[in-house]
Image 1 (cartoon, rainbow over the protein chains, first blue to last red):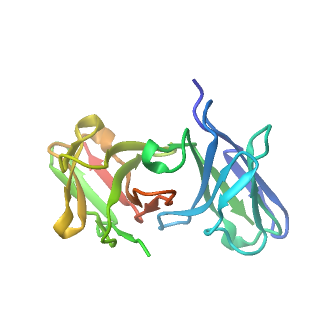
Image 2: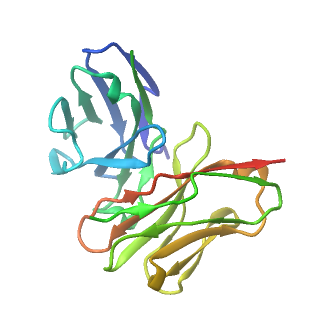
Length: 115
Length: 114
C-alpha cells in the first residue's frame, strides 16, 4: 500500500528555469494538498485540488506558480522562471475525503534548490 | 486569520527527561488540533489529534497532548524521551466545518542526547 509518492526528492534548477514537482496520492485518495516549507518556518498551505479541479489556491503566489491534478496521472506543481527565494521543501499530502479531519498523509517532499 | 504559535524553536534534552512542547492557537471557534512529527529526512507523520471529547489525547510512541480551551493551548508531552524522539514537531489547527486548510506552527526541533 504505497503512500504519497513525490518525485523528484531533490531538484536543482538555475534561476529562470522551470521546476515541475510531481505528487501521486495514496490509492483511493482524490484530494491533494500542497504545502511549502521555507527554512526556519512552518509549513505554509499553497493549494488544494481534487481531480481536475482547484478548490482553494489562496496560498499560491500570484505569479509563476500553478498546480493541476488531471483525471489521469499525478498532481503537478509547476514553478516557472524560478528565483532563489523559491528554494524550499515542497510537501504534498492527500486524503480520502475533503479536509484534514480525515487525516492527511504526507509525502516525503521535494527539496528544490535554485542556484 | 488563524495562527499557531510554537514558542520553543529548539529543545535539547537528555534521554529519560520529560518533554513538554507548547502550542497556542488564535481562533475562538471550534477547532481540530493535531501534532505531527518529522524525523530527519522523512515525511510528516501524525502523532495525535483532537476533535472532541476527552481533552487528554494519547498518541503513538507514548506521546500525549492536552487541550485546554480556556488557554487556547494544545501542549505535547512525553514523560520520558528517547534518543529516537529526535525530530521536528509541528502543531497544526483547522476549523472543523467545511474545508479549512491545516495551519501549521513553525515547528520545534527536539534533540535528545543519549
